[in-house]
Image (cartoon, rainbow, N blue to C red):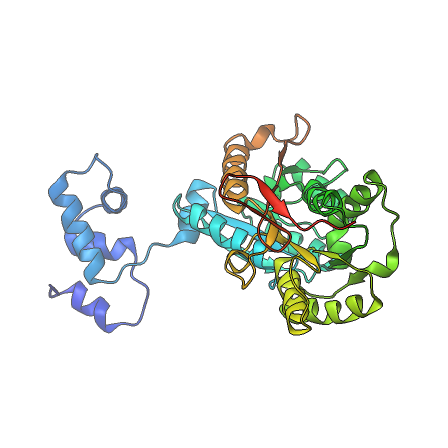
Length: 361
């Protein structure tokens, strides 16, 4: 219901409606209007309903900037991604955003294209915007001093990757080294001796190290000619990589650092008449939905996104609550160990639960 007087006047003027306008319309104090909009029990039910009804009619939108000045909280969390095309990182960002919104926070997303200098710049931007906290997929170890300085400034930050080094801030991460080790070791234990690897370069160093260690531990000599580096995770890159690898001869197994790469390679093998897993075994990483429903279901390392995002958000909230204490102890490290989901592309579970797979002598 549109009222006469100020309501009509405000509706004609193109301006943002303020709490002062609602207060003047209803003859209430600004403090009473503010409390009513917050559903405070200090204001009786009838008044709360009247205030909220008029606010709705006037299309009142809360001023989050003004509120943040009063509360000394921006209610914004920064999130920095290396690649907008990485499916697991995007899923992680989406899940974290939903968890943040459920608790009254908004997310500010930035991407770095895995550039160290731009990552440093992005961190400066988020700090200057006075975000309440930051999630970061670090591109590498090179910005540790910058990250440490932000933590020392009592700005909560949770890193979403880690490795065999001490991170400069609190972290929750999947141990990708262990995941890659499990994948390559599984192939070796099936009897494969020529195990190729497709990966994304510097961003996949943990996986690369896990692959190499698994070969060594299983008595297999590392052969750099069986390793292909790609510049992006895609079906096409996996397809083209397989076209380079298999004509060399002798390769009986392939481990890819992404399910997209593995599925692209699977497509090439099928087109060439190669049987999977009889002629070649294939393992991916991330356990995407596409891996489960592929023509030949793909064995893959499971990236536990739900567990990671839940733990990461809980840790950041704790750091925000205890903000003044964040530099008084060593950074928290929460490691999640991935598992290997075995399917038909290199082995499968029979009805009695035993694993069957192709053996290579």
